[in-house]
Length: 383
Ligand code: MRU
Image (cartoon, rainbow, N blue to C red; front, side, top):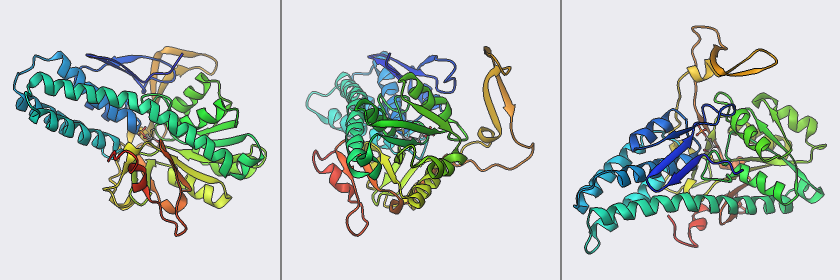
């Protein structure tokens, strides 16, 4: 069975509620852009590519099911307003803003085409949103392929034999339209018989690692072990040799023009660990995550989330032996009254990154230590 975070057919969209995973697999219907905005804000759906695709498809569903004016300009204005609203849901991941920019252009062009009417503008929007869903899966498969090949041939561990990799947060089928980015690289290593073991970090405070990545690894029967975020240094020091750890591979929410990368909080400390221990640190992301208009990490807005995500944990009751799915409990794990800082992301400087794996290949720094990310857009002029 293939894991699907997004179920779509024209006029219908369902998302797997990621707040209920790994214990309950429940889908929510998304009927409108308002529904999508709330699902994204509450993190029922999350992960940079998935956020963009859910937002784009939710508006497609809304358009397909509404009574439409025949006036092209009115449909265009409606779509533009909804896109402006959708991009306000979460600020850091650039994929949503990038998708909105491309969809605005599609709608602008469709609205001035000869014979344009409400129906033709709607159709142009819906087709473009549907293409994003399809493209994301093939992009991820290519990221997986390029990343796995690079790791096997460019790391000391890869030259020795099967490699182990560490990953952070969730970047798999649940964070994308399917297959995943960093987790796609691990899937691809496994598929080609080159993976010894995957280690996933818990990823506090939202636990995307223990709840979502661990769920995907178990689902795919990939040999894997969960560690808390604070165990990563000891893991590399004590098991780096015996497990043949080649490196750490993570996803991204926004890659700036110079390669600085915003990703889930904790990514930066993992990059420092990789540098200290001489293992590779790799970012896997589709080109939709690369933002050439953001010059460096200093220009990336980091979302801050409510403190209760740190102080409270939620899950089904467990009495030490059995799990009772019928009773979901929230427990406090911090002293009452303590102040909390909860940035959802951090920025890893480009100097700590060995390679950026995209669907068109792996970008490495030049001899001056500079990434030239503009080259990944040259092939098909996608920016
Ligand atoms: O807050 P989240 O769960 O949306 O954060 C997700 C991440 O940071 C992922 O690593 C990133 O979006 C890439 S997903 C392919």
